[in-house]
Image (tube, rainbow, N blue to C red):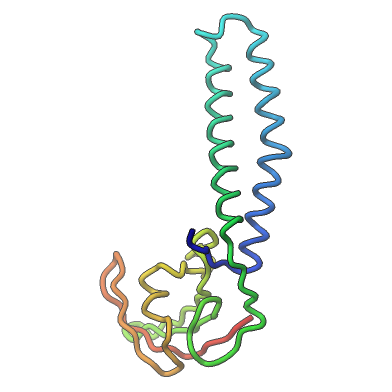
Length: 157
């Protein structure tokens, strides 16, 4: 079983989602199934079938979260240092074509959100950055085409 790297914040978010799904969603869905059952004939009861489908989706997500949490390798980014880009690093880049600065943190897959500046360790951008240092130039092939960046800063927060 492969370990899944994630930050402490990403790990906490998965735990919170798991708790909500187990302690709030599961009882709510069970109540909806019981209520739909009381309406009679289950073969033509859309509410019942909808509630059962929601139950299946919720239980599937609970199993997925439990699997991720059991394989989690939580990395405390605040204890990392250095000038080389690695998991957890917050990297400031400048686009060599537009001179626009971008800031990305390299995080685990489950916590990635490009709009918030968090890119997955498996993304093309993160793979191009790993092992590089301040001043290095990188080429990234993205769905929108190739991009050239220069690394301005590497921090661990």
